[in-house]
Length: 449
Image (cartoon, rainbow, N blue to C red; front, side, top):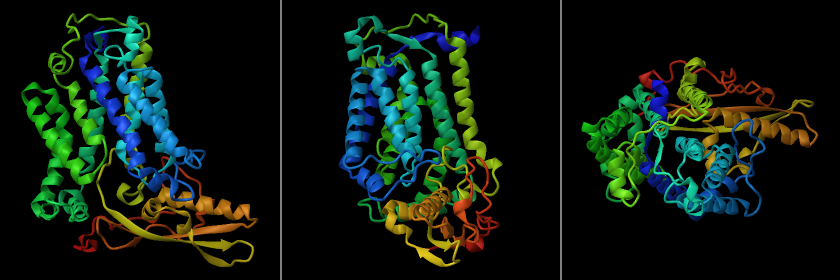
């Protein structure tokens, strides 16, 4: 079969081996960096609870210093990945612990966190410890200088999905007129050396259109040999710019590490791992599990392609409702802010009273909750349960005013509906969200300040 020949042809594994080392170092820095920078305190420990992904209510931060030990252990797993020591156990453990934190909180939500969770799962399955690893030194029988071609295919396919959807998501008026980049750069006016430059109108248009073109074309450009080197140098500039301006941790460097899979294996071998014998026999080894493996990965990639499309099947605009926003590679696309109040109503007496919900939240949570319908709903559920524990039956109402991309404030939530009694639908629309109507299309609602 041609498909089997394509997927299971053996190729040199230098790129995977070198990437494993880079990946292990980067995920170690991500874990231990969260301790050193205070991210754990700001994101997980300041509030009374975290806004977990709905359905994962059992995931909450460990008490005391538990989350510091948690991240310390994650970092040790990253070191083991880099060294190739008990590789699959270390990689699986890091991925499981990372997924736990990812699903535990949303106030510091980032598409890159989601990508890292997926990559940990993929890397667990890859034969990345078959050379230059402590595992291969301990057990020479696993030593290999080749790997199946599907390793390249899976990694490149995953990256292509991420970048393509990121490019498509930018094709909307507020991005195309550069107003969103302008607002994003305004918050960086005090950066040394580049702060003033980032306020220039031409820079905003450059960010807008280079972003679209880079995300849409970088994978094909890296795959095509005549443009590969140019694409690589452009990638260096693009990702270093993102690292300096947006300060998004390890991910620009992780993206650069992925370029290992686009260059000729012989090139990677010569540059990084010359002592390893180079493989070019191009044998085909079809394993007994090939049909099951192909089916599982086909389902995985079908899901990856489908998830970012779901917002098109949900009422209203995703920029307004946020329904279908997560897990969809909608990165750095909009600017939102808002304010919210919660009102309780005693169902026995009819008495209404203001609820000081902010006393329960961290600074990050306070900034995020007004603009995130799922967090508003979760807060209402938590408040309802709190009063039930006190022996009171209380209706919970919310009044949220938000602005999107600098527009005037508009009410997001119907404040006559008891959110404590509303169910949550992961794939549908919630009628307690007020319609956006012409809010996102009427130019008169846009403000210049």
